[in-house]
Image 1 (cartoon, rainbow, N blue to C red):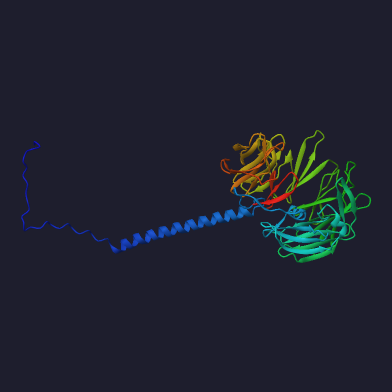
Image 2 (image 1 turned 180 degrees about the vertical axis):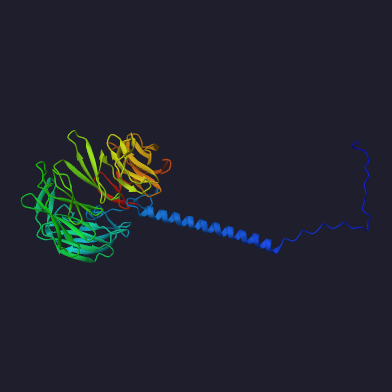
Length: 486
């Protein structure tokens, strides 16, 4: 048909209405209620699921925040929270962390000694329990540290609820050219205190004691003898009654000045006794010799994160060996020096690292080699989310904790090296510091997943590097002074 052709059209008559459209079929009421109810249930289910996921994430974050070595949140506005004086610095370095406070033995300007709790965020004193009165001689000393110290009494779980302090009126007065005066002690006591409010739980005499460590219910003290020997006694924590005695061997011929005295350490229910020229003796909490000492040039490392002692000794050819000593396990000997983790979230079970010309991963239970990496660790190592994070001379490195393969590398500025690695559980933070003085150090935050630089800020004036002590983030300068960062 052509475009212009006429078409036949039929028109409705004027009186006729068009047929109405059929009414829509009504939705059955039950079906509608089912749809509405199902949607509500779906929304409610999604809300519940999200609440559960959020709760799990918060619980995981809380667990990580409570992990030893994990500091409070760090951001690019990091600055100096407070500057501890020498007495407060001595408290921080005693490493007792409970309830957001740092606790320890402090020497006041008048030479008196007290057990104090310092708020970690502000430095304000929460409480102070006086343990020894004023001492004019100590007040004139340039050294504000105490002759004694405080150690945490391990709790079954959570932070320590008690601390044991060795309180002595003896001290060494230091001058500009070294040791000037050694004042012998006339009074030495062990005082046990509550970490929540500082009240005294026990106070008993320990004549001549120069060193102290503690296990649950047990205080172990070392007393040097007149013939160069010493005696170690395990005592009831509350009453001070002697439970057992141990006599270490005499120091070896290569002993150094002021290093001949006995040293003690405790971890995981074991007590270690070290004397120069000998490997460490390991005792049970009942005083039984588990590992006898033997002649040799040796040292030890206490790994509180892993809960074990590591005995270090060198072979005649100069090689270094490490022996893992743990309660209820056979000793495990490894080639190289163990590199303790400063943070370990448990995501790579039974992993142990040794450091030397490379980094090697070992099985904690059997001593079997797991992997070997050519990176060279320079400071410390952390384990988070299945990865091992290392500080090296060439920068920060992340390794796969199962295989040792490099996941990422974070470079530092030319001529700089990274310092101690610190984490708040979300970022990895290290000071990017000049090797030979030079310009101001910077604080660099790396993303845990891929190592990208999240932010980079100058360290506050006068600070060269940073470190974590417990949950504290500390900075220090070339003058050795510490500050609390946050």
